[in-house]
Length: 230
Image (cartoon, rainbow, N blue to C red; front, side, top):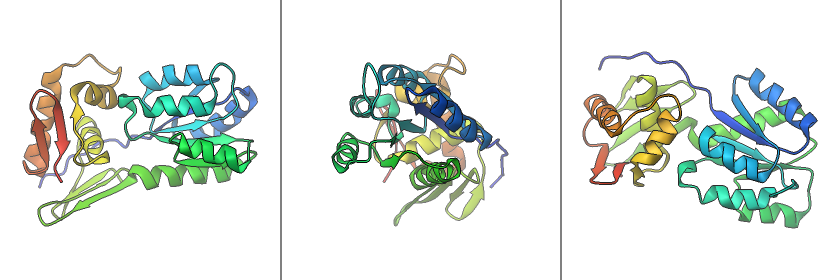
């Protein structure tokens, strides 16, 4: 199988806190690690930015003006464009009931401030690895692995890389095997605001993926979108 080269894409992180000094410190350290970072100062701003930035991870404070982190987390989980996003609270509130409320609202983790930058980076790396760095799907019909850290795909024992958009499209379908991703979600998550594209662009990329990994992996749901077969 022919190997195609592609650039590695760093995950996007949305940092939400109403204290500017905390924002500046954490943003500096995340960007030093190569992450793409956007910031917001309250829950309402978080929802607006998340809708267009489409982060892979959101670090969310609890106590904020206009809309607190708990309310924001609930709303984020209702947004179909944010399927698969990791949400971790980063808060000085350490009471058990606050942590329980945060996790019950849909968060994946609760990190207590203050925290040293290096430890926070380690936790961020761990959350991203746990979620989508190394995804494996195997059964009697399917053997497919996606490694976002090394930017490789292993299909039926063959290791190769894909062009940027094809890799992101496959990774999106892989994030929830069996779930149907409609065209709106695919366009927003894979292409975002980079360029104006139409449905035909998605179809072309799906066809190219099928040519490389096989027709058996991706199913068309007519009038809706695509899903990864189980």
